[in-house]
Length: 266
Image 1 (cartoon, one colour):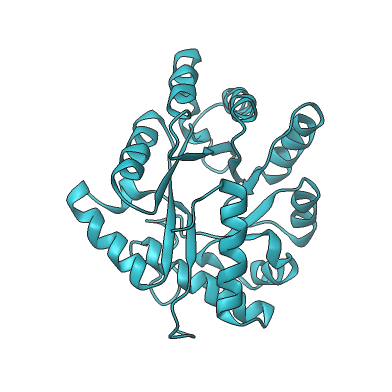
Image 2: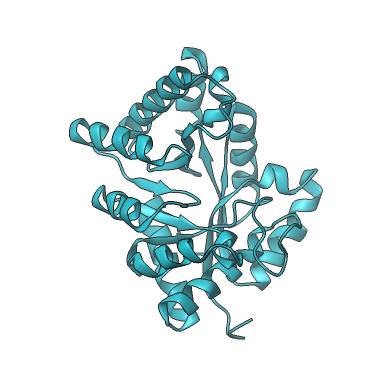
């Protein structure tokens, strides 16, 4: 590790219900994250069950917050009743975002029209609640940017493009929307030079850090299940790319996360 001093980091995107097999394992994961300087974690929903679980964890463990939403790969589960339940869940004070939502043309598990309808309905609900959105845009980045651009002309919306994997040009379009870009352990992969160039390009005041646990473990843990404590490796990679002190990167990215999601300082 690049700095022995304690940093305050935020893992803005983890799936804690997938990281642990049962709730009894969660204290170990959270303690491990704390030792790495991670003070806050947002546990992100992909459907109703995981959204409920995220809230449960947030209500019962310090430093954990929740995001609720239906992922595009699960958009076939979206309905008027599902939206009503999500709206009810979103009233919980530990819910800090709506997501993850968006489009996924890589898997195409659900018809694109179904994905579009679920995405736009959830954007509307998030805007109504005043919650930022967490955007999933796999092989559909331009389409997601266009939808949010059009939506923003009629409604106010803030958020983050999670696990950003686009080009510098696409990053500029996201920045023009007023959104943040979040980076994962992918920026530590040997074949990810293009993405590292993008991370170097994006202003530090618009960057968030995340793990997407249990996925995308950074080097040297690549191929192993990921955990929130490893967000430190993402911040360290950003500090190298920016030629900034690690603690300054930690301070800036944590400030960004708290500003966007309205997190309480622990």
